[in-house]
Amino acid sequence: MKVITIKQPFASLIAEGIKEYEFRTWKTKFRGEILIHAGKSIDKKAMQKFEKYNLDYPTGCIIAKVNLTDCIKIDDEARKMLKEKNSLVYSSIIKHTEWNGYGFKIENAKKIEPIFLNGKLSLWDYDYK
Image (cartoon, rainbow, N blue to C red):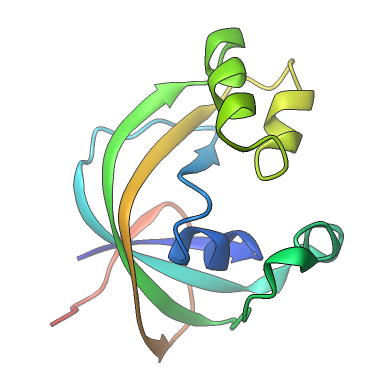
């Protein structure tokens, strides 16, 4: 199964269904189930920003299974949509109008028992049963 490694607190926000888009500089044609791996690095500023959600933030482990259903170009229209969805969660993308990347649409997040292992770049494979 495909896996994507994401920094905390963003991995937990996705696992909880709060964050519906993950952002990358590259696009993907992949659609289907993927696993969310919480990387070992933490964005400390973002952790403070999302304190109100009162979540657990495990690191170095797979924490959720989701469906990657779309990949959109981040432009002014996408920023407007993201602002309407959740201006707090997507504030860094909304503010950085010069950033031209992609948003991976994530749906049906389901938390799983953590599987501890090292992450990798891009989409990577893990034998999940």
